[in-house]
Amino acid sequence: MKALVVLYDRLLAGLALVSALAFGAVAFIIVYEVSARWLGFRPPVWPEAISEYTMLYATLLGAPWILNRAEHVQVTTLVAMFPRARRAALSRAMSATGMVVCLVVAWYGLQVTLNAQGLEIRSFEMPKWLLYAPVPFGFFLLAIEFFRHTLHGTLFAGEEIEYYDKRREA
Image (tube, rainbow, N blue to C red):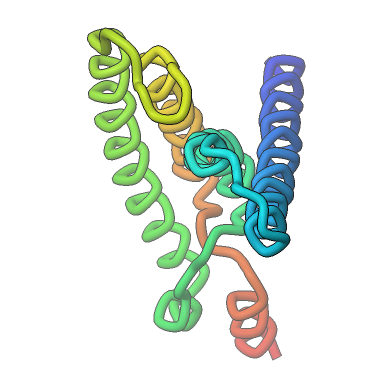
């Protein structure tokens, strides 16, 4: 079982790397398009569509890794003041809710992906199912991460939580 968890964590790290490289590519594409326009050249038509698709893929591939590390945006002002046991219980409840929501989105995303026919025609042709494919995959991985947080009660993390814990112990 530990080998499976290690393999899964490596998958998330690999997807995070792909996501980071994709966001870097988007930055380069935008600079290229703006520079071409600024220099008086007619910019190509493909950068806008490529940037949109890349941001969709990068976001949905990188989000599970961020959730795994509990480095997502958190507003923990009220939660930080809870005793550790209550905070863990709230973490489990919110994680279970997040898992259910992600599974529902993944299910409907899978239905949309499987039923997508034809081509997405913008500056180039792309099968529509390929446009929707990261939704069920990414949200399924997010559901797994919420399940892991449900088991361990570790959704809430960060400096604010640590500050209140140290202050309470002193």
